[in-house]
Image 1 (cartoon, rainbow, N blue to C red):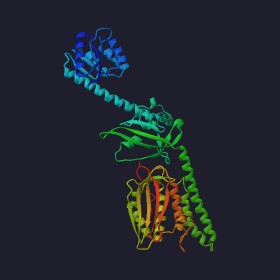
Image 2 (cartoon, rainbow, N blue to C red):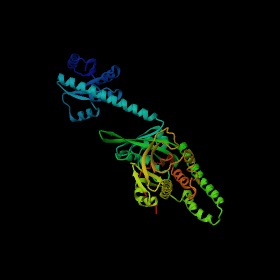
Image 3 (cartoon, rainbow, N blue to C red):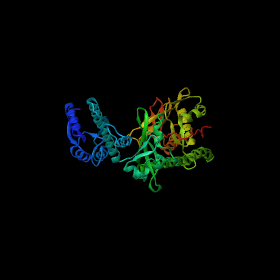
Length: 478
């Protein structure tokens, strides 16, 4: 390669001059000729050649193999060994210096050109790879988020400084340990251990997206975190995984406070509405009959400890309970459109049953007898910065659609208020208030899309929760 700088290390002066002449004719630049190992080391450091052509057998205090080893310690220059014959022990020593090539004496021009060209090319490629690795390492180390990389087997390779702080474990202590030993994650609600993020990333059929959990940090402190994982693949082969973790403690505390406030507001509205309704009853005999169903629904709504939240696959739950839902909707036809690709959420199944019961009842009351009602599921992604109180991430949308009379803007604004109703006779209007409370408890959001004369769609967004065990189908409609 024209312009490539070569250092010749050869203790036979005539051979060194011959090699220099050949290299010059080929367009190489000879930066020096060294006759012994110590001179070779000095010239390699001072003159910075692109390639060193090193005779294995050198006279003097150190031979070519030892000189090559010392040059490798001080520089990053590639070396090509030249030898006539060597014993197996010398060749083994030479291999440990990781030479870029070998030439046999007497040297042929084609062999010389090919070896130097390949040596320099491979060195450039390796240097570019090293530079890329250094850049990537520096990027990871300077990230404000915690980052952990693993092998294809799920063993830890690196932790950046933020990951060391978050986990309370130094990289030197974490390397080669299973990721689950370093990143101890637990479910926010059940406190059960979660599977390795790397294992989820390796599964081509699973896209866990951004997930939340409690991380066991220093001194067993539980830290709310968001995390995601991605597989590192090369030509379809899994090479490892990169896991990103973010401490969301301030946002989690704020969210939990807002969620609890929403739940308490929903419960207090129901209680206040019951009191108001009872005060308006003219007949004392009607009070017990009126109060009984309210108390039962309020009991379900308010029992946060007794009704355990579970991971429920909405598509499966609706399929299982569709016959009972159809009976409730009679004589109207109830259709299920299960379009969500991933439909598992965390909710108390008995509250899910109550919410759908109320929504279907409202849809039936608003629709003509011949009209259809539909239950629909969709997968929705909430992007960062979206105008919503919900966090960015994956959600499951559960909707009940009717073709009834719809609502005016004024009615829609008050539809979820306890005891608000447009019916002259019948129920007291608790349905949507109860549903709102259930949705709030599950960390979701309720929206109403409606137009007078064109029907109503009640949309519920619930956080997507990856399924780790059997989906619960219990507590269905009776």
